[in-house]
Amino acid sequence: MQKLKLPGYPFRFREKNGKPLIYDDLRRRWIVLTPEEWVRQHVIRFLVTEKQFPPSLIAIEKKVLINGLSQRFDLLVFDRHGKPLLIAEFKSPDVDIDQIAFDQALRYNTALLAPFFLVSNGMVHFICRIDFVNHQTRYLTEIPAFSEILNLKS
Image (cartoon, rainbow, N blue to C red; front, side):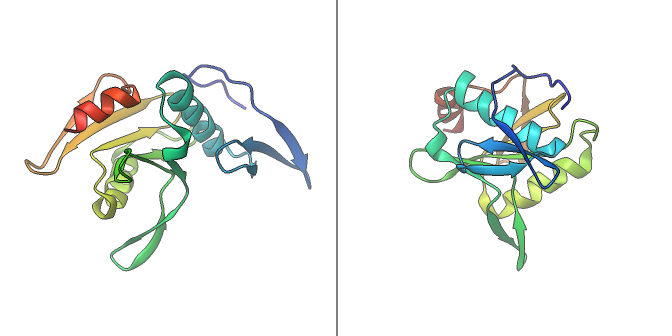
């Protein structure tokens, strides 16, 4: 798999029926290793290891109902009260982060109302804070630590 603009982490790999798998520590199961999954696993490790996000507050690929349609977000982080804090959308490293990727994350967030969203292809990362009251989005220069993002949310 391609080297990403994230720290390298040790992962467990295996193969099944000719397909590469990666062990997901949060879901506690083997997942087909696609380029998008490679990005997701790196970002999760980065959030947990470098930014002290509690693993117990991270949900991966869960359904959300949007305009009556069932959709799946890539990753959602909750605050300590169980409210959505950060939604993330991941793309393969060879997919440019464009308005379509942002729109996808924002569409999921219409139902979740997380005050932060992250879009990453492993090479480029965008993190934004959403002010729902004033209908504004502000880009942050880096992904804050979990404690910092809790303070920024207020």
